[in-house]
Image 1 (tube, helix red, strand yellow):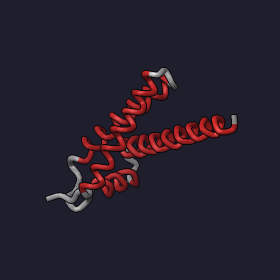
Image 2 (image 1 turned 90 degrees about the vertical axis):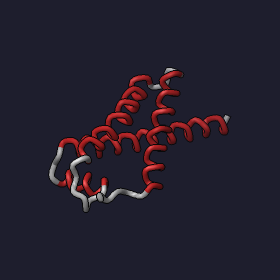
Image 3 (image 1 turned 120 degrees about the horizontal axis):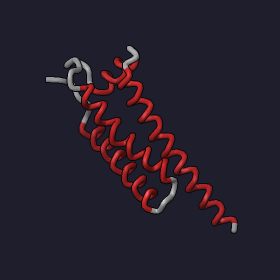
Image 4 (image 1 turned 45 degrees about the vertical axis):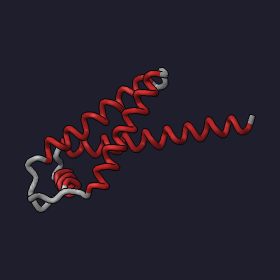
Length: 110
């Protein structure tokens, strides 16, 4: 039997990806940052697939996160892509929140 991360983590992980894709689709439908929205959708779909496919043969004593870190330390291309993708999604969310806050401040000032 292999180690795996707890169920709450997987719920939060897939909820994060689903909300990210949903917000990107909404932005795409309203024609806000069309290219960035397409890139976010692409990354949010491909990163989990790449991670899943490359975690299939992992050692039983490692969970998914430990396997990712181990492969990243070894310079594995898929691990670099996965970590870069997760970082990109987090930065995209931060930029989105900052843009929303800036827009709300302009409304309050007027």
